Image (cartoon, rainbow, N blue to C red; front, side, top):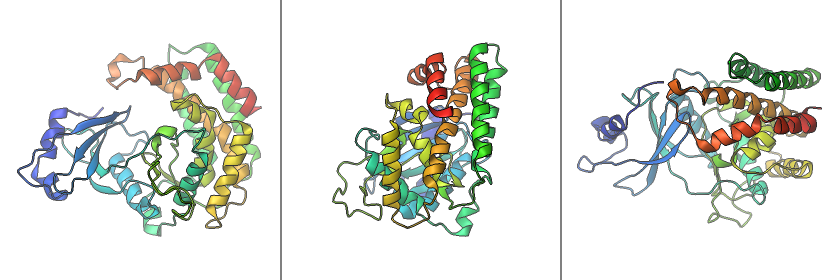
Length: 353
């Protein structure tokens, strides 16, 4: 893991390079406050001494996409997404900041709470429809990874992640066999589906409830924007964006491995169908949604496999004391649940057969 120290962060924030980039006065010393700590990033909060605006400092420690410039990739994604009004506006990035892991990015701080599945689904549908309707120029599109076969790319990722578990001496043979069998079922589903050739847009691919900022103080009049949602709602954490099909985002958002991750919610079939209908209405003809229901219902089980195989890989990594990676007790609890025979059996029975 690249070197990161708190002292290096404080030194960098008070350097002339950083001060000039953000128009900071020389005489004011910045003191960052830890906002959130994940497996791959550290987020800090500062207040601009001139404008009074709160800013997020994001330090990348590990690239989930195995990119040489992870922070730059995320920064460019946010630049391309800015016209949607639904994502944080990026202000600055330095992929070579010394002592700061894989680099640092600064973007605007946005208020809000995590998404609640029991009451926020229509607002989430409007938010995603607004983002997916964005049509960036070709120069922006060329900056994104864009798998030709979206489902095949996810399954390939699943096989790679599962390999970490299968190769570990800690692996449970029963869990290994169950995951391998489920992956075969997902592969069969993918082979039976026609090749994708529809509408593409910028997609997030990591739509858990904690990446939504629902702003209840925003415009709830129904006239807030094209999607008729709350214009104060935003989607953050654009670490793994792709130029792909919107159904991949919808499938990830609705999958039980996603909804249960930060909450205890698993959506019913009716709630899933109603959300897709709400999304189609929110799209309002701004892009082609033909076939999106069928593709979303296919991506849900494929996303479950992605969540389960990632959990298997992470379960092994969490027990490697030499990795030095931060470990979250809530994450460990969910990893154990996801790899339990009961949870695996439920996913197989309800989504893969």
